Image (tube, rainbow, N blue to C red; front, side, top):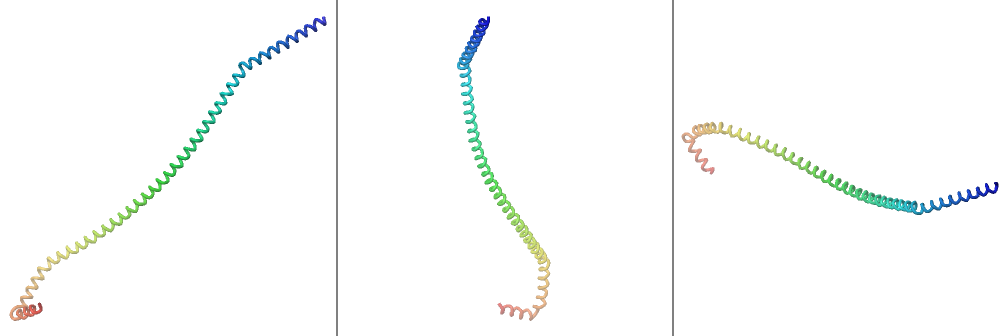
Length: 162
């Protein structure tokens, strides 16, 4: 019985080793047939995703540089525009100041002319009142001084002076 039990144990171990070997061989075949192609496909897919990711990063970096360049250009244009607007504003202020000065000078000139005109008008009114009276008085004086021989002497003197 010992032999029989040893034989059974050896057969059992051999059978177990055979089944284990067959299982290992089958696992190797399955791995080679299915798992390795699947893993290779996954690795290839991951590599493609990595390449796509690298390309997207590169594209984003180029886009970022391009945008930074455009922003810098826009900032330069904005600075130039601000300078032009400031220059235009300063020029406009200068023109407005000059117009104000001109307006003040024109107003003063008109005020002066009005005063002169008022003075001339006042003089003319005075002349209109005074001249007829002065002529009347001069005629009367002339009549008094030129009556008789005095008038002939005065007329000769005036004619000789001419």
